[in-house]
Image (tube, rainbow, N blue to C red; front, side, top):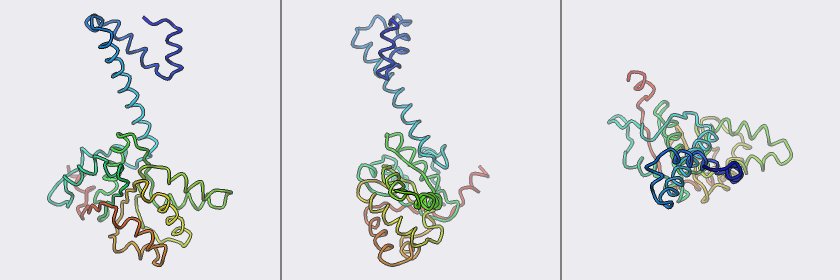
Length: 246
């Protein structure tokens, strides 16, 4: 058994989980009969898993998913949805995050775009990436509230540029002011080629420039995401209606 001083030191090193794992072993005669290396390996595996689980749950909580129960294992594949299982499996591997690529889920209202965005975002959390979900109207509202404060614009830009995966839901759903477009341009510039963005939107790629007001800013924003992106059409099947009858 560990003495109190040893327990104190383990807690100070932020590995207090070792205490419970060692005490569990002390009550298992079969485990106690194993060589020290084997026992230590088992303890390490237990502690690692607990710390990993805690970190993932913390990342999921901090991501603020609109649909926290969304999961890639619960994606519905039917003939009514033009969603490829192979494409979604590739996306769920989160290789796109390693490659700093982006994803677009585009389709009609209630076609499951938000579910897919949150499900992929949760998978990124499981691979220990920092993820943030936010609706574009909420992001622009936060920016408008902070921009008049000293250093407010920079703080908002730095905050959202720092997330390895940023999920922008309701992308381009509202009319944008010139200030909105300039902010989106600056944010896209900071995130370009170093992070991944997941867009959930009603609008096809050819509509983006118009929705962004046309002109140089719009062209520049779209250009940053024109080639290094995976486009997933979610179709027109009403997933809320389908699940309500399930």
